[in-house]
Image (cartoon, rainbow, N blue to C red; front, side, top):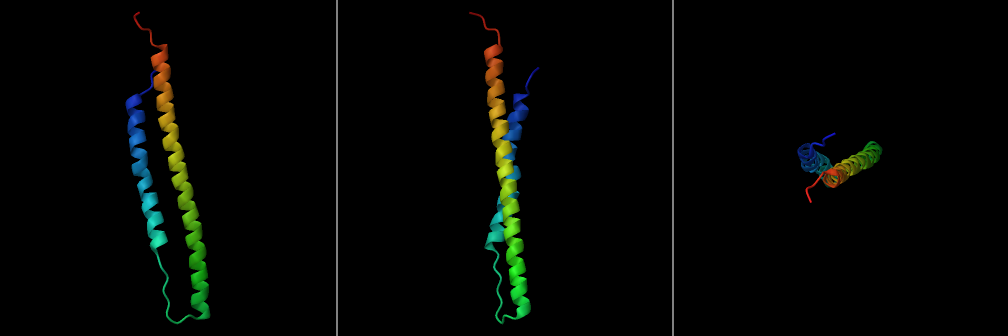
Length: 94
């Protein structure tokens, strides 16, 4: 079995790129502000609903970011371990 180290390196270099939209979305959501000059019962309930939706979305995006980081680390470790195993098992002239 031969491991395609180049493909692992490419995947590893692209994972941060894949996570960038998640980071950007988190930043945009955190930067959102709700402004209302004359509060009514209706706008209060909308503000509460917005706050709950924002919290849920932030939690989901954080989880996706954690998953992306987990995969990035797994691919990196797998590549290093397989390379070390191939080097250790390669016959060398003494």
